[in-house]
Image 1 (cartoon, rainbow, N blue to C red):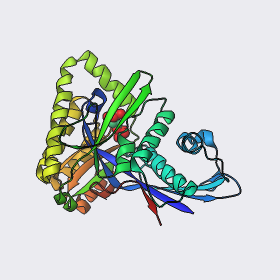
Image 2: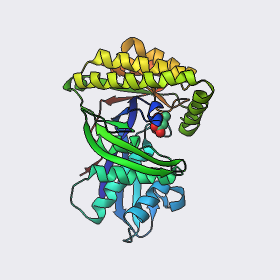
Image 3: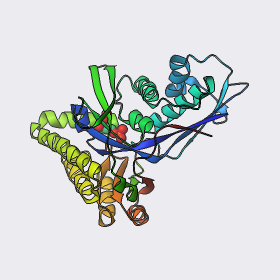
Length: 324
Ligand code: PMV
């Protein structure tokens, strides 16, 4: 039997602005997806008959990427992420599936994280009609904190470039790893799920409409890009209060572009008295918020009292890995 685990992610800075070529910063979180594979007499997924059409990511990886033609497999998936909450569960599934299948076909005990990030990005693109940014897949594969941008950034570790032919034309991204200061080992992220799914496509389309009708909001996009750069400097310096201030400022701009919601604002406000900073994370509309704190238990309680589902994580955990 082979087992692999890949983490989920949350976006710390730059959501929505990244759609317009600005940088976004995502961090890997402790929760994620484990995939177990073993040879079997028939194809089974979580105890049921495996129906490839219902699992496009898995089908793509098995058939198109690895061109697997060995014995049928018993596939078991165990996720500790909230589903459809903007925490990158499908990217984590693709990475864990790719790592496990690679190891099953050619056991080496080694992982090529960049290769897996590319495979998983292609799986996301197939499953999402050709539109997928590499943010979730790269954060889950590489771990730590990744910066995704429309161009190569100076003064930061460039890892690889990704491209995709989308229905709107070719898109290109550069993926970097951000430096995380050792001070961050003392900090925790607490995510708060509103319980409502995060409709990424709808939120992105809503922002595009707003920018067309009210071009003054372009100012918010530029401000998010500046906040992201300030946040990156604060991450490298390990300045927790400065990271928190940048998170709060980012939330304000995301409110301005109308992607927050009363439920997200409620959870953000409940977390703030015990946090360095808090903001919605990902597309908004529903989904999750994230707080940076050195008192995770207190923040988790506050989120729960406000009606959210909390999830505590260390900051920027390891990426996809095999499990013994
Ligand atoms: O829903 P999430 O957490 O994957 O975040 C989407 C982030 C956006 O910037 C809104 C969209 C994108 O493709 O980057």
